[in-house]
Length: 223
Image (cartoon, rainbow, N blue to C red):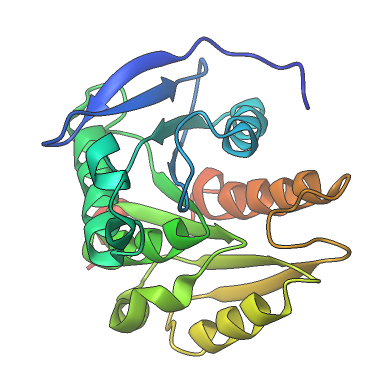
């Protein structure tokens, strides 16, 4: 894990006042909103590590809980992609209403079921989402929303996660925007193998930089 640290601010998102951790490095020129998977939270070590890596690249990051504790107790909510997608939309709208964050292009970083939620949110807020990255995700759970995505989408899957590779490949066929599927050698579903998570984060960072830092995204031009 990197020793890089930025001070996180506690924030509250949406109608449920979902707790979140916001970090805005000086001179940030993009915001990455995380959509975690089932059984995870804003304190997930993997997502915290990922956020720190992206902060090093000059991105602001927002980690937040998609479900309340009572909602998380009902396993049906964990796989309710429409509900989770709406929560990501609330985070996007919250960022757009914040004076510090409103000028920044937004990227969505989804993992597991959170990847499906990120795809749904990107389809609902095409003018606001500049890029999407899925790490070990289930974009297939987004269903018909895949056909509405305008942002470039990067799908990262562990080489050993063969069933999820097939699901990602199937989902990719429905996405009309620029889409890329990359497998990480030696990695399983959670990228717990030494070095595999950092390889995935390097790819994610490059994707966000290409489609957010490079000026390729013009929010006003998206229709």
